[in-house]
Length: 618
Image 1 (cartoon, rainbow, N blue to C red):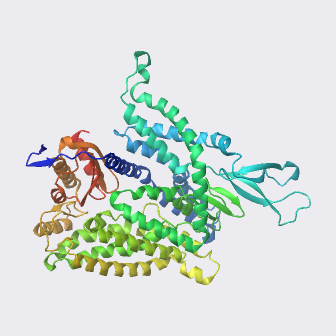
Image 2 (cartoon, rainbow, N blue to C red; image 1 turned 60 degrees about the vertical axis):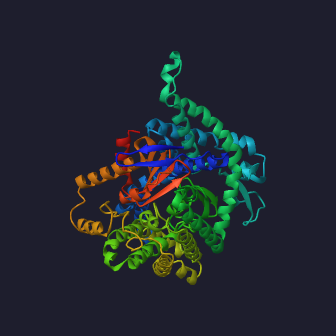
Image 3 (cartoon, helix red, strand yellow; image 1 turned 90 degrees about the horizontal axis):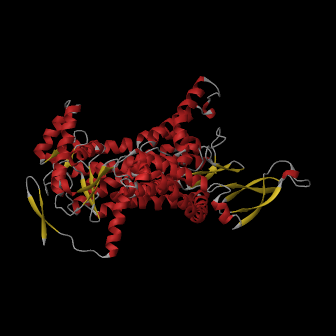
């Protein structure tokens, strides 16, 4: 039995999906939920590039190791520039709580964001020292130490510290008869739900917000009905969430600290960690789930190390004594100047500098000669975007869904070069992605880190300038592999005679081409002053209207977007409309379960999303 989906121009029979097993339904709903979570993470992540930029520039202008004198005019300007950026990274958990609650709320209302912040404040308060976690674990996995440690022996108080909640802080034994090298331990409370706690609070609040925002209460309590009900249920449910975190999170964080110490303990372990992360990251990219693992490693994983010269403290970090600190998250640690941080960032720079642009060059060179110029028009633009900013989806998604083999090769090579970079001791960071802009901002701090190595050989290998020859080698490898695989497997990349050059999408003009002749028109348009506000609005309107027509106005359930994708939840995503969507300017179509539908559009996707919401009125 079939049902007809009626469009203004055509009628296509769409088969009604068969009943699925409970397992399939679970994965279907899980896929849609992860899609929405990944999208919501882009709200807090969007603030990081400018925060990182201000943090790095301000830090550089206040750096005494390059001759900046404290309290000089340049030093004060650097302090003023650095303060807003530091404020973001010092409060990253609450920012994620607010951003995720807002991003997952169906109507994107401020009440959800406000309650997300309230929920995290409650969670942080209930899990601090002397609260629920202390009640549960103060006498579990203990070690002997001293509380209120000072240099006065009569003020020392014997104490037992739980390793689930504290880390030892060694200090000189001040008691009579102690040798100068005798150390005793104090304890530093380290339980920190961090970004994971923020994301959990935001997701929980959004769930209750979507469920109860229209609730009606008895007349006597009518004031607390609707959205005013959300703060009350937030307080009650977060109290229960705090008990769950207090019971479970100490064990998780204990394991994370051990893992973080292990990764930081040697170059080999750091390289291994970088390989595993990079491989998984690239495999998850087509599904948008890489944002989840990124968030965990960049903002939650404890990174231990000493600080760069001239840096005496880290706001929000944990001082272990003897110059050692624990900072939560690889990006946060690099910004703070923790030596050895950048393990989960540095390895991506060769991929964006050499590998990904080389795939674009391979597709240009393998295109038919009479279509090569037109093909280069849009591919060169996407390659430049990847090189400068680290946004690679517009280029990668041209081939990533055409060949699973290329996806696997891409993940494997990215992992290998990431391990090489980290294994050499190179440490780099970024605020958004591994593009040239972030590289230039990171170089001063990376260079200083390289000079902290003991041997001259290690200093040479850790020099961040090695990124460029490594990128060149990676580019050559990518070029020949992509050229060979595309030709050998007859993959229908742009400009080849095995299929019409349509569905290609110029980032600069956002015009779709039906064939090579249309691409010539686009190339000419791109050379003129065609990108005025009025023409752009018309293009967004046309693309949005075509997407709504093809998907079906009544088929939409949720309309959202991330950095480059339109993320939809629809009643039925099995429509045979891929080619028509591509002809409308969509790079790629991705289906998740029965309802998840992602359309890769480009960095201006938000404008198209807004137009679709206006049309659908959802």
